[in-house]
Length: 250
Image 1 (cartoon, rainbow, N blue to C red):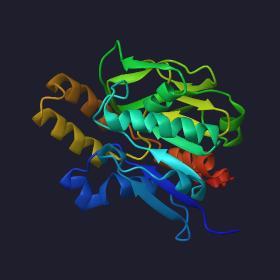
Image 2: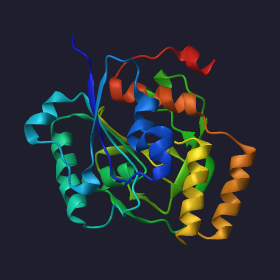
Image 3: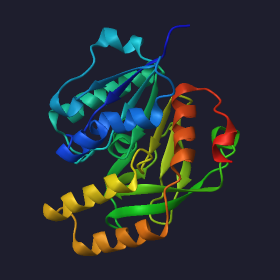
């Protein structure tokens, strides 16, 4: 068998800080998901209108959709183009992992309802509850995992084809699956606390969030850590369909 090939559909523009320290958000995702040097990872900057050609889609074993400052319920040209691509990937039964904006745009593409959260911004480290789905049970994960959150939109109504596999006190649909090939995660398994602090500072300077949002987030950062190794295991297992040694969590 040849080496596996994956593509990141980049829906955000890199800040200079993330670009210099982590190689951009593409580098952040590859760091989380790459298993060996034999894997091939490409990036398509879809927020700038850069999409894979139709005859390239078969070349990939899976796709990852990133977060974005844009609204997944918006109708920007590139968002509408992305919706068409996701419908095509669904028809092809390609593995697709969506994170934050990616989670929401997948929900929209499959026929769910997305929009602003009625409870406002969710920023910081938050525990979420995992379901007893067959997929999650096979990974021998704990019933709760902490993840970094940074969003004010959410999937409000589940797509008809999907099932909820995680929820929190604040967000009813933290994770969903559709078939064996599509999964959305509202939180950011790829983030660490350094990236979160950088985003908070940047958002405060631009008046995107208010001081009270940052204060609540800082308390959660100081009191808890995201379960990064567990999220790494979960995401790799879904995207690559392989069994990663459960000793990662021991």
